[in-house]
Image (cartoon, rainbow, N blue to C red):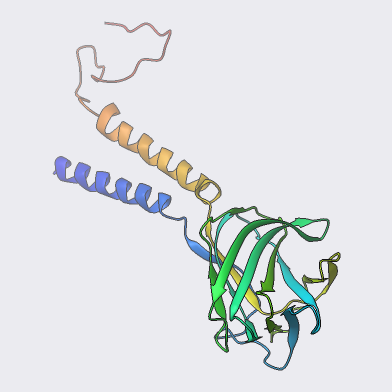
Length: 235
């Protein structure tokens, strides 16, 4: 009976440890899509790489991970090409004084013709730090014209940035429709898990080590009992 109970305890503790370390999971870092990836079809931001009509335009939205560090997995955008090669140049960028800074990853998305939002999947999977602002910027291939549609939920809390013909970024309020997904970094997601695992290991050590051989020894002392350092064991 004791053997069965010991095995049951071992299995239960193992399950807890494995479950604790398996808590790193994919999550939506930010989204301003409506239900079913709904977005506003009536207007948005112009995307262009046609120097004459109207200019070369890059457009980006800000977002900030909250609570955890994440590995960047993907972004979903209501951005499409109307004229020219149907390819989006998607850039994950750092923040520099409230505007897009340096490029962390470049992703090229083909067949961006809509109306279903397109997905940009990361290969590099850079780390996005909690409470740090980043930017998702979109450009087009030469001689292309497109649009990044507005969100339909009235999201005016964040910023967008526009660059015309390589000039400085113009930053304003409101964002077009997009979402960002990532995987919680194990180091930040697993601190409590590690503490739980340590507690489980202590229980295992006590059950299979400290309790082993607890029969009354001569003089009334149980065998296998640890004697604190500096205390003389009596016989």
